[in-house]
Length: 183
Image 1 (cartoon, one colour):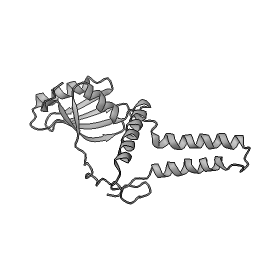
Image 2: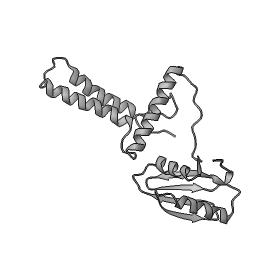
Image 3: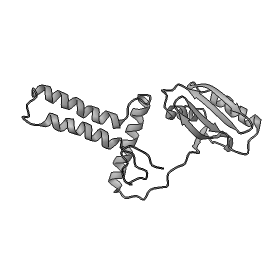
Image 4: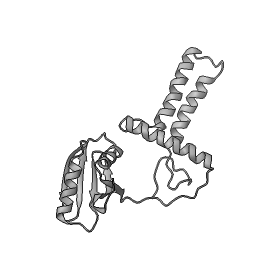
């Protein structure tokens, strides 16, 4: 399917249950209403409020639906969604090609898990949870003794990986901020 400029909308703001989209210029009230009608056809969209003067569409959807599902649904209807949100500057590549391949594979697996669970689980939660389950199982098998110490190592890995995977940095490869984003 060949997309035209008329098939494009900008994603300007997202919060649980709603997103603000904008029809790009040059726009007419008729084009804005047409795009709103196309967005309404999505089975995930509950309501669309239209402002023809600004080209704004306020889209309401289920609060537990991640925006990824809404975007994919709109793309399946032939609407291209472009982000109008501030994109971070392209980072300098400091990893090997092999590491980049592994990272891309894991990112796709994480996205698939995220989409499959409707945004409830991702690998940053699943990996520590698996370590925690293994630690509990080994603790029960060893009856709390420190024979092989594997249960407490797994427990440590569960907590360590959870906290490390949930750190947020302001710049790719930049200093960690303990989970706070610094502007």
